Length: 417
Image (cartoon, rainbow, N blue to C red; front, side, top):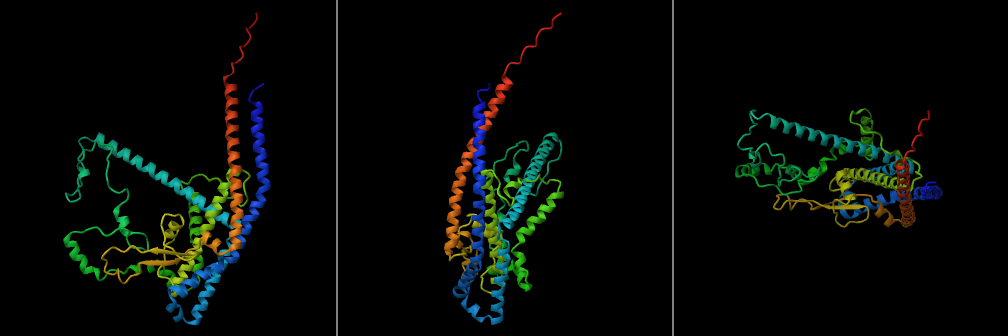
C-alpha cells in the first residue's frame, strides 16, 4: 500500500470542501456587488451635478451667469443623458463584458510587444553577424556634425554603455497631449535663439493646446459626446476583432476571470473581482471625460485633459492637488521666464469620478463598500487556504509518481526448457 495514499485523499477532500463552501458564499457575494452597483447608479447623477455645481458657482460664476437660459437647460439635459447612458452599463454583466475586452486587448499588446522585442533582437544579431563577416566592407559614415563619441568606438564591441535617457529627450520636450512640455527647453545656439525670438510672438498660447483636443466635439453640437464615453470600449472591440485575423494574434486568454458568473475557484474569484473593479473605474473615467467635454463646450472648464492623463491619476502615477470630491486639480508646468506665464493659469480643474469620493459623499454606498471589503478579506483567507492545499496536493502527487517511477521493475521469470 502506498504510504502517501491517505494524505493525498485528505488533501483532495479539503479542496472539495473549500470549493463547496465557496459555492455557498458566491451568491451572497454576487448579490452584494449588484447592490453596490444599484446604489451607485442611484447617486451618480447627484454626484455629477454637485461637481458641476462647484465649477459653475465657484470657478466660473460669471461665465455661467452669462449663458442664456436655453443653453443652461440644454446643458442639464446633456448631463442627465450622459449619466443615464452610463447607468445602463453599470451592471455586473456589462462590466464583465468590458473586462473581457480589456483582457483581450492587454493580452494582444503583450504578445505584440514580445514579438517586436524578438524582432529587434534578431535584427541586432544579424547586424552583428554582418559587421563581423564583412571585414573588407566599407563602413557606414555620417556627416561630421552628426557623429558622436560613441560612433568612434570599434565595431566589434557588442556592449555599449551610455548615460543617455532610455527614451528620446524630444518626447519629454513635447510633453503629454494637451499639456506643455514637462522639461524646460534645452539651450539652443545663439543663431537659433535669434530666430526663435522672431517666432515667439506667433507661438500658440498654453491653453490653446488644451482646447485643441476638444475642437471636433465643440464644432459638432450633435449628441456625440455620449459616444465618447464608450470610446475605449469601441477601440478595444476593434482591436479584438483585428486580433482574430492577425498573424501574431495570441491564443484566447483565460475567460473564467472575465465571465459574467463567478468562478468556483477562490483564487480565480479574486482575479474576477479585480477585473470588475478595473472595468468600473473605466466606466467612471469615460463618463468623466464626456462630462468634461460638455463643461468645456459651455465654457465652465479651463481645458480638456486627455484620458491617458486621467488614467495616470487613477493609477497613482501623477500627484494631484487637493480638490473637492469628484474633481481633479492639476498644476500646469510652465517653464520659468515664459512670456505667457503671468497671463496663463497655473492649474486646471476638471471632473474625475472616483469610487472613493463617491463612497465618501454617499453613506449607503460607503456601507455597501464596507460589507464588500469584509467579504474580500474572507475570500482572501479562503484563497490562501485553497492555494496551500493545492500546493500540498501537487507535492503529494509528485511524490506518488516518483515512488512509482523509482520502484524496481519485476524480473521476468527465466524460460524453462
